[in-house]
Structure formats: C-alpha cells, structure tokens
Image 1 (cartoon, each protein chain N blue to C red):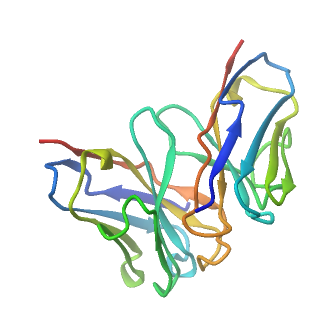
Image 2 (cartoon, rainbow over the protein chains, first blue to last red):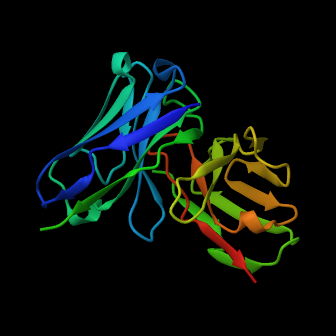
Image 3 (cartoon, rainbow over the protein chains, first blue to last red):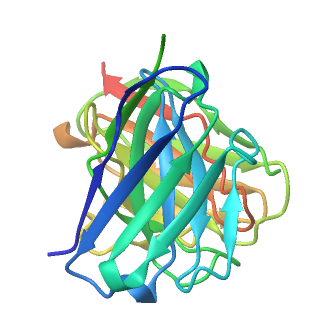
Length: 123
Length: 107
C-alpha cells in the first residue's frame, strides 16, 4: 500500500529553522513529482512547494519563496522541506503529497497524502 | 499567480439532494483542475482530476465538468459520508493554488 509519513514538526521560535521529512513507501518514489501543502488551523489548503522526479524542477509559493527549500533523496525514498526564518504565519499542519505525474509542467493531481505534521511558530 | 474562487462558500443539504459547487480561475487553465474532499482532522482525498476524470475508487455520484476558467463539481445524490469540505486546485502553472473551499453540511 502506498504511504507517506511526515515527521519533523514541532514548536519553534520565530526566526528559527526547521526541517520536515516525508518517508515514502509502496510506490516507485523516483517516478513522481512531490509536493508540500499546508493548512493553518481552521483554514484552507495552501500549496507550499513542489519538486519534479529528478529534482530538476522546483517551485514555491510566494509566501515562502526565499525562506524554504524543497529537496528529495530518491535513494532514501524521502522528501524534505527546509524552512528558515520561520514566522507566526507559518504555523500550520504540513502535508506531503504525491503527484500523479513526474514533472511540474502541467502538474497532475495529488493522489496520495500523508497524515501531516504540525509546525507551531511561537515564542 | 492564478486566483481561485469557489461558490458557495458553504451550503446545507439533505441526504439525496443534488449538490453543485463551482470553481472559477482568474486565467485560462485548460482542464488542469482538480477536486478534493476533506473531512475534519483528515488529509484531503482526491476526487476528480483533469476537470472530469474520476479518481480510482471514488463513487460515480461524483462528477466534474468544465474547461478554461469555469468548472463544476456535482454530487448527484448526497450521502451521509459526503458531508465535508471540498476544494478545487489548479495544476496548470505554479504556484498550484487551491480554492478557498466549500463546506457541505447537513440541513
């Protein structure tokens, strides 16, 4: 069964950094683009970042551009999100999601989602 | 960036009702329109991709239509398990924006 499991969330002070991880299993991880999507408490979904199958294509939401880096290690079936200069508005549940396609150009739908990891930015 | 709007923002309906949710994009996106269902405390589930293609395992009472800038999600006969929030998303160009959501609750 295809599965995504996020980790690395927690309470962090404003201005600090955090690295989220997502472990994939049950499907050929290196065939597909991957994404991070977040959801602030009681709010809607916000796409954060995406990466193509071979890391050649990366894209970011304007709200995180310059502060966040998405990466992947296909040998380890893992996706990462390095978040720097964290702000209170970054507080959210962060989901890892699998794309139906391999590239970000004309991306496909997100067909597999993890359960998410909570990031709280507060002093 | 492509802006997304959904209407209504919420609706109350009864089991058996036909429900229609609309999604509009600020720019042409061809058919790169996705629909998700999210229940409280859960990750979203994929319902429809490419505007009208039903994802594997999704009941046939769900259907999607539209292209260009105007899209519709229809639930032909609302079931108890369908009470949830529904989001559209465009995957035509990054950033891959989501709509604000439509909450469907019990009348």
